[in-house]
Image (cartoon, rainbow over all chains, first blue to last red; front, top):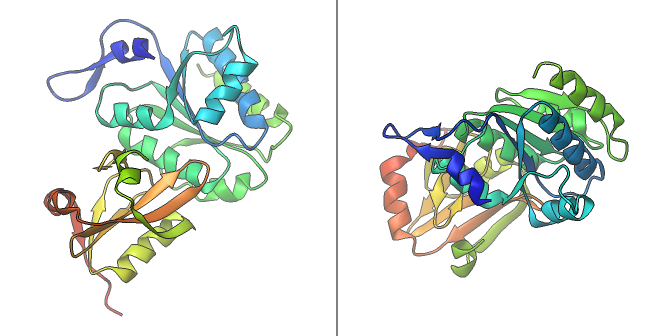
Length: 170
Length: 99
């Protein structure tokens, strides 16, 4: 957790800047893990990011983080793990930021987090919308971001395919 | 919720969508301000879809609070004089639409 805080520091003009050449950083914002594909796709995405030289950082609820930690006990895929509220505070106070920000959305509160990230972070926002109401939820997103939408709850394959397509541009 | 929890905020409404939160606050309270996502109040940073509306009634402040697993609540914090002064100084005042 501490390492991330050394990546960015506040400059005189108040903007977060990189202190050292650490490469690109992607933030994965995870809410309540009640839809099964969330943990699976988060692990898949972290691996994909690492293969493209992008460092994954998880900001999630306690249960979302715990599911990942237990699934990847030897940390083959997991990057840094941050508490979601702490991460929001750090970005608002310009003590950290990222290049890419994937927000996992399967209920309206996920849209609230994505809208907040879109407002407070300079990262490119990618909304990963899934679950039974994925298309209805995606229709409520009116702020600028890239959307990846799949009506997936138990089967991660549609989301995986779309992430593979997206990664082609990295 | 930290300080918000310690203040024993009253929960005025639960599980609302963000448009419902705005409507709830604007229709029930006399003074309203628009703030950006991430606005700091007590020890929390407000999560939400802009425009985020915070209300004032007397010495009380009324604001939306989102929990990732439970959706958005409307909370009332009493005796929030310092927060109200900061809100009046930094928020964008909005008026009720005339019917």
